[in-house]
Image 1 (cartoon, one colour):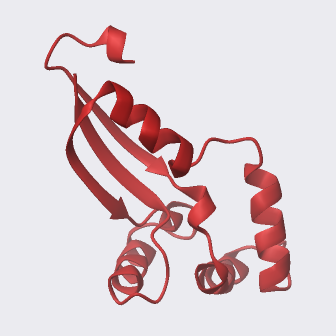
Image 2: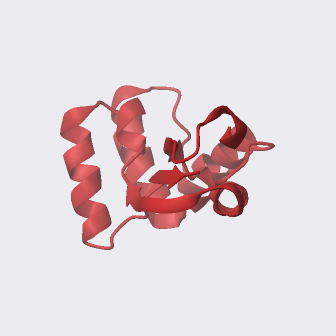
Length: 116
């Protein structure tokens, strides 16, 4: 990506940090998902197991961030809500944002802006 940008060009990323799904975040996610999806797992443990299996082999934040930092100068970074897109959109986004800010669930998305 860095080679495709001109000097001073910017990379803008909105990505999923899927590996940050922890038990309390899964509990909230599962409650929201069960309300709209009859095939949702029956337990938090099942949710986490499915989550990890569905994301196996994908790069997470822990792999992406060092790669960005090797090639770009960070201009902006922030943790963001991400799960709302599959749980009902804007209304759920504000709930997710509020819970993240209150420290009740983990942010599973991030925004990164880097410059060459």
